[in-house]
Length: 384
Image (tube, rainbow, N blue to C red; front, side):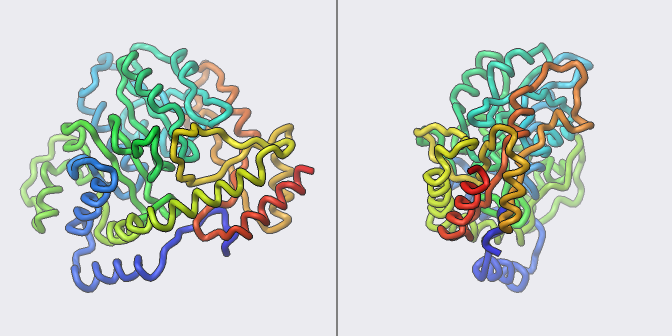
């Protein structure tokens, strides 16, 4: 089982936390356990508790972030036109789905071949008067040149929504991702750097956005977060805008609290050590390239994609499968999905080239050094 591509690392402590909520608290919905999880996340990140809005998925957190800005005219845009958001096409479909769900239009951008992160020169070519935000995706946990993204946004008058689903625990030039910025979204699904079973959170640096998102996750019942955290409910609300049922339950929050406590002593060192072992063993192999990262950044890798060059991707995957080693592909570019195809748009050659090259190797804290050595031996043989 250790040689799965990825897996949840949960056990007795998480089970005990769920038992405590069920048997001692007795309330399974959103309540004190969720409040405590938000407070602990805020303490970890070094922000105020009001800034952290948990949600039932990372996709929900992204949807809330977009909605908090654009559905309510906090950012001006042309009357009758959908607000547009620049977003790299090489990302999980959740990024695009969240933008559309919140009433905006994703503008697919190309990426840098060395990192898989957004190419700002390409993004600039796609600017028009309806573009109001940019959504950098920290692909494979890499906040590549994030300062440049914020500089670009300031110069162009754009808001920034970070899709940091892969990047919980990472630092950019010494600062934790989620401790600074505009709107930052994390995922806590079953295989992320920490999990709450299913879940995610938005970190907002704008109080109005935070309040809108906190209400919107509870069907836009104004102030219902305060009521639930006080152990009461809002029985006679006045609903003034669209909302969603996106809140995080006490059960999931209880799992997340245990996972957060395990992050620094267990998960961070394990993920970083395994990634370093891969890098040492695979660097310089013919027909294979590792993705780059900034040496000033502290990466806690969620996935480990490599580029298999010279048309060898399929044969490489088949060779590893013959050794019972699973691989993945992160991701099919969104502009190649029927729903998000935009006829007449500028081409995205790097995204498509990477789609033909990227192979994800097993990575999770349940792997042993022997497991990684097995994968690397198989990779060397496949490329020989």
